[in-house]
Image 1 (cartoon, rainbow over the protein chains, first blue to last red):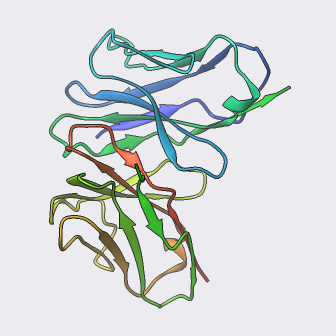
Image 2: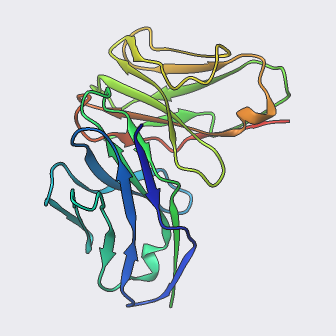
Length: 113
Length: 113
């Protein structure tokens, strides 16, 4: 079946540090890949996405590249801010699956000033 | 414009009771999804509506769970004979077309005592 594995949290960084949150997936076919973010007290928001191999999604300084050979979609940011503190979810959507999302468990990121 | 709204934001009930959770999708969105998020986990798919019909209900855990969308807009998730294990955040998402980005509501936090 389809599954997403994210690195365990929590992750605690100082402001301006480099961020990587690892995400690997298992799926048949060619899924689309997503990163969603949940800020404290808010709903899930789409952060970025990639729909085919070697695509790079980017938004708000975050990037992730769809790597089919390693079945990965790691999230990176060069310099985090306190306002990036949130829970980050990696997700996939497999073609022909009625477009439902399969999520990882989430990674809590805390950025300290 | 308005996002996805869900009511109530919190619901506390007793074991064995019946509950209804409501989702108002973004106007014009034909696809609607329900997910359930247990503590420390990512959201898990429950059911998908395309218009008025449930196109995929494979994620409903058992026959105590049922959802409707009679006019192709508002949806209600119904849980009969609630159990403590049903305690979770129930999320609703909608998209203009199924293959497009899903927008999430803030969720209903259900606690079964």
